[in-house]
Length: 220
Image (cartoon, rainbow, N blue to C red; front, side, top):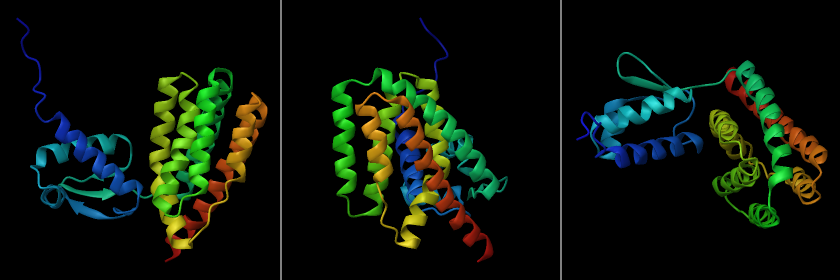
């Protein structure tokens, strides 16, 4: 008989709370700098504090929230130095994943990436655009067959995605997808150098736009 196994009855609930909190952060419903208590979150979700507490621990590990001793949490803000560092790392890691993906992606997967790009070009709302943009990149990176690398990339995306959402909303930006088209063309041609070059340009442009937004926030 196996003994001392942890209970699993609340796993699904904790995961649901985690996903809802992550979504709220990524899509700007909980903005950087927002302060809220554990009790307030539990009341809003209509659950006990335990699944909320566990979800927050996972989000804190991803550097998205900071839990204070008084059970109040803060949605973490970024400095421009943090942003610059994150994007320097992202460029290196995402180029690595994309270059591997060029070698391994099936024709069927590349066609799926083309379909996602077409859907992204046709989106109206910012939230849907960000989802499709993420799907475009993630579908490519997953082809690399490097799960640890992909997990690190994913965590870094989460740390800046809410700023991208707020930037697009506040500035009423109509995104341009020429860079994505170049990346995909490189994938179709199995040209790793082209994919890496345009991916770098895409990320550098995003970093530049978000940096402007952070500077604006700091002087308000």
